[in-house]
Amino acid sequence: MELFFKCWIILIAVQHFFFFIMESLLWKSLGRKIFGKGRNIDFFNDTAPLAFNQGVYNLFLCAGLILSLILRDDQCVSTLRNFILICIVTAGIAGGWSVSRRIFIVQAIPAMLALLIGNI
Image (cartoon, rainbow, N blue to C red; front, top):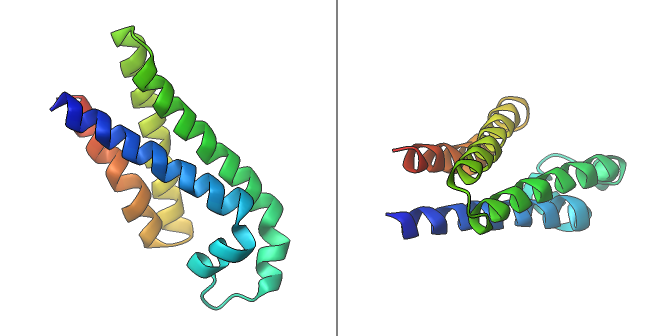
């Protein structure tokens, strides 16, 4: 179960690294492909600075999860991991409510599962 849980955390970290790449580096191409339904290129040009900043926050979440796998103090690891996962759930709920239900499914649900698995 421990190995499965660590792999799940790595998967979520990789997911947030992908979000960083998409939002910070590829917003006008890949971001447009994913979120472009009904939007022209001007939207992506205008929102690129906001997307860049949002992507950096996703990189912080990724780094926090990786750090939680490296640290050895069990209480510190658990506190850090739970904090980062709660941040991800919160962001997923906000994104699902304000942008697309798909964000809730892709972002919040995996983090919720990790919280459940890690705190059993």
